[in-house]
Length: 201
Image: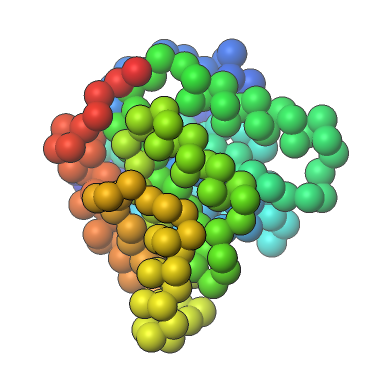
C-alpha cells in the first residue's frame, strides 16, 4: 500500500450525507487535542493535507482521504470544552452516526495522548469499540515529549487503564520524530488487505 499516493476526497457535516462504503475503511478517532491531524499528515507523507490548527477541535466534519485507492476517515475530535453544546451534540452524532452505519470497518485507530491518563471519553470509546466488536488499535501520540523510560511506563499504565482486550495492538508514535509511523502504516495495510479482519457490519 503506497501511502505517498494520498489525496483529500470529501468532507461531510452530517452522518446522513455519508456515501456507502466502497471498500474497507480505516477510521481515526480521539480527543480533539490528541494530534490526529499531525499524525495523518505524517502517515500520508504530507505537511498540510489534514489541516493542523493551534485551536483544538478544528475538525468539525468527517473527512475522507484516499490512499492508494482506499479510504482513511478522519472523525471529529471529541471532548473539547470550548464549543457550544449544540456543536458538541453534532460532533457526537457524527461519530456515532458513522459507526452505527453498515460500513466496511477494516480498523479503527483510537488515539490517546501518551502523556496523560486516559480520560473517561477515551475509556468509553474503547468500551464501545469492544462491545461493537469492531477491529481497533490504540495509538499513543506525542511520544517525543517523554523519555524512553517514561514511554514504557505510560504504555503499560494506559493499557491497564483502558482494560484492553487481549491482542489489541498498542503503538507508541511521534508525528514530530516519526517514531512508530512505519509500524502504523503496516498495521493499516494488513487490516485493509484482510489480515485479521473482523469483517464488515
